Length: 131
Length: 130
Image (cartoon, rainbow over all chains, first blue to last red; front, side, top):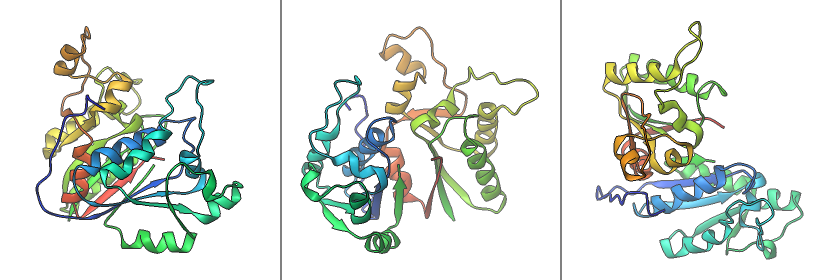
């Protein structure tokens, strides 16, 4: 991340940003590059929430080990989100259930919401970025 | 309306680059302002001037460059995504000891903050690509 230039925003506008993670953490780079946006975006002091649904729920599964496929295990970085004041993490209940997962399988504290609740949250947003 | 566009797919493999281009042209024709076009993920591949499609096909990259020149568009390629995929401008090439650069005219390389800023500054942020 050291190659990303520091950028500051002092416009004073606070919008509701929602990042929607829908893909498995490995197999494509979308999840990893999504996390990079969330981390950089945190510096802009916006009202940020992060949602995990569909295969995206695997992104925060604990005890990930990527050594056999030789890719970066960035799952620990989700735990750093709190330090960046990104504290609204939501996981879709139906997506977890369909994959036989519970909150105990996750490596970060999240709020479990139903599909309908997440839909309502999306409607409240100014910007929704889906990865 | 002030609109920004995010393009997450490269040229040719997916239609997203074409759809984004046509959307922007249509928006401009309707009198809307395009605040910024941000290229992320494989979308950064829209910004290499080394692209050489067959002559009877559209040239997606030069099409972006022309549109940028015509409408003074801000085409921003994400630096982190670009570094991974080998899209470099002169200063990036120098900084990383590369023997060439390949950024197309009208594009500039900058940080992800430009994407967030586009979301803040625009009335709508429209995303193209999977």
